[in-house]
Image 1 (cartoon, helix red, strand yellow):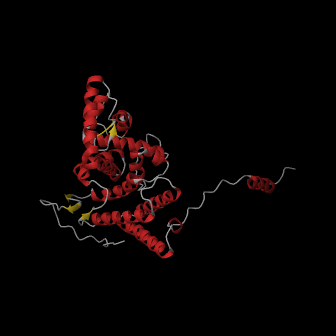
Image 2: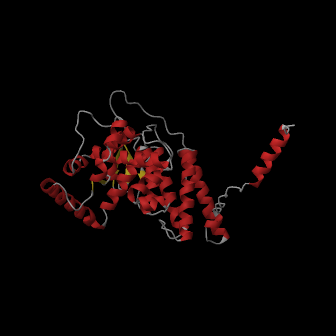
Image 3: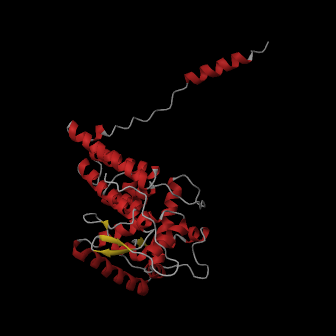
Length: 339
């Protein structure tokens, strides 16, 4: 007589119980465990962090707030473990985050934005707002990611009283001349606003055509000389950069190479600048100046590039639109948050 169905179910249950359970991830340490301060100080820093998280929730959305929390905890874990971090101790990271959230809030409310003391170069980003938005839109990525990369690269080029930028420009000019004469150059691999390499630019043809982002009437660069000339065009430099980023994001998110859906996860504001600046560090989830501040720059420019600004030093002053069709905008309903 064949066994009843209950015997089959019993045997299957015993077999399931005999199988090894999958390993569980170690619990993430609490924020308090990551703050090496006396209790009173620790609670004050926890309160600041929670206030910043709540502010971003109100100013942007819940996903942005969670991405900030993830970055802050990653930075603090890196500090404790000895991995590369942006700051040597938690209070430096929290105070920097506070300044960024204040700036994001000012931009969201259409107020003057004080960027004093923040490692940012808006004078390189704002003049190219239209190209940044267009290139990012063409590849379905947040334009704040692309703006943060431009800011990181140009801020770095401004260091050392212009020496870095002067050396870079001299190398670019020499490399272009050698490429035109010899067909290749053994130096200056990256160029333009986002410091895109000419080798990577030549690899973007299929993806740009897949997204319909390349003008079919224009020939695609095929040589180093042609790629270098294309990368001197701000829009093309940004378009090649956005295409390279989109390929990385698709691979990282487990999407097929031909997937063209728009990507909106705020964690991309960390991943994009980090990977563009230093792929191996990004893969290792390290935090350093360009990746830590790059995240906040991404959030900031995603807000700021919605408007128009006059730059006076390190202060952004909102500009009103005048002329036919212009109308007064009601005061912002967002609270004046002071985390």
